Image (tube, rainbow, N blue to C red; front, top):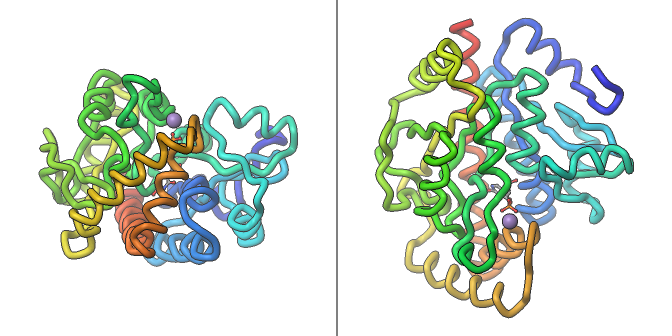
Amino acid sequence: MSVALRVRPEVAAALDEGRPVVALESTLIAHGLPHPDNLRVAREVEAIVADEGAVAATIGVVAGVVTVGLDDAALERIATRADVVKLGVRDVAVAVAQRRDGATTVASTARIAAHAGIRVFATGGLGGVHREARETWDESADLVALATTPVAVVCAGVKSILDVHATLERLESLGVCVVGIGARSFPGFYLTDSGHPLDWSVDDAEGIAAVMAARGDLGLDPGALVVANPLPLDQQLDPDLHQRVLDSGLARLRDASVIGKDVTPFLLSHFHDATSGASLRVNIEIIKHNARVAARIAAAWAARR
Ligand code: PSU
Ligand code: MN
């Protein structure tokens, strides 16, 4: 492997031996959650994955080294330093060449995970088409990466700050397979149900592993498998509060002339402030829930091999 890529020995050993591995992204640590909660959550999520018998591989870029499986010092560095750059797929090589610290998004984490041989990945909510995309053309690079990367991504749908309907249409055009786990409705990130029905759902991790196997056997990869995993109803954000805070956030976004990759962190941080931390608690539960389910899928996948 190249000098720019480092796979943590525990992760490499698990991959070699066919044991379950779960990739985790670092943008939600560096740019999606406030300090100091972010570092605590990053550690807790890894512990959940380990608790389920899988090896966690949090992915990020440390001083120009793409790292699959950040150790605790690196997690702390990504969670605390102010100069950690949000890296989409197109940014990774520049950050490596310039020896920067960077946090990887869903798109870049998925690509690096697949490159390293990891097939299961957990995040919070995917990026997608923004609500004013007709004017702004703001569509997350997550979508294109999902169309071309063979990895199962466990998520609570797409972030509810987005145009969910438009995002589902784009996922269909891009040929991205979307399957619910224990759900008939596409989740709405902070909300259990986005109001959009799912075409496909399975009951458990074995059901997802069976879909992964069929995709591989038939050469239907290299697209991703989106595993839609809603939070239980009693843990969702209050829908009325959600609507109010979303409206105020979108209005503030327009006034602040925030663009590009700062849009999503801006809106998430508005939610965390304007709900006095309620959305933060929900976001943390989403990430933990997805990590647990991803670990079970990784185990079911490893058992089939
Ligand atoms: N899920 C969360 N919080 C986050 C993200 C996902 O709960 O902050 C991140 C992911 O890294 C995702 C990114 O790829 O938000 C989307 O950013 P953008 O809309 O700029 O593509
Ligand atoms: Mn964008």
